[in-house]
Length: 257
Image (cartoon, rainbow, N blue to C red; front, side, top):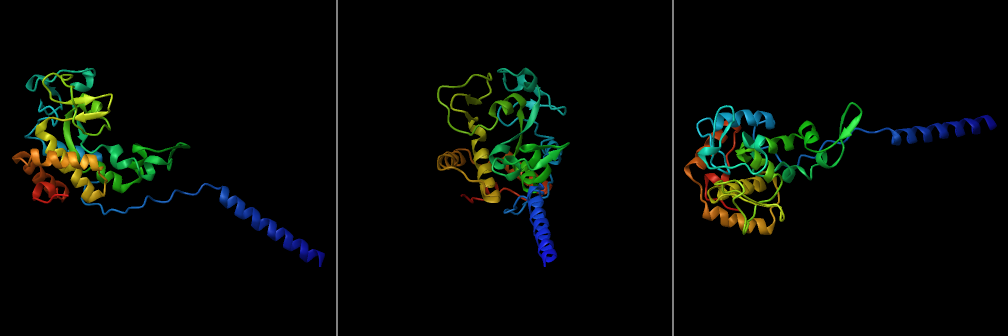
């Protein structure tokens, strides 16, 4: 009888230890929930940048300043009156700017917030992790409707700052009408592209369920009316649709949010 009781006690202890060990062993992170269907066929940002060069091959003009640039992405500052504010090195070349910044569509993703990625024993999170783990993030980051060529310095100064109207600012970039209020952390683009920006945000809201604040919606609705779709925006949309398989409905029709 004692032998049976002892055997049962040992079995119970082994079961408890097995459960404890299982709880202490790191489990692989669950995949990020994909609640939105991926709307196009571009796999990632690197592919998108290669296609963007093709898309803009006969329209090499920066988005914020309307500066010309060459095949090597070198900016012709004299073509637009752009003057470097601070960062001359990044001011010499264009970079592919996300109108809706990566932090806006990636900041709430699990891969951005939690250290689910690992390399050489070190865990990490953020944009690099999302590029490795999250197909939907890659689709948003590589969406050509959201990519435009911009002077590198302006891309850096814009950063994650939202768009807004700025009073009493300007002149930091010469004749380039790009205003940054570093105290309020907002950016005002030139009038000729404000509608393009609004329609890009509306596109991201519709396809990727990215929320827009009431204040921004009011601003974008006004920009959408004040700067209607022009010939280049329409042609750019046509080219993007051919390359990635979908168009922006807010460029293609009178549809409004």
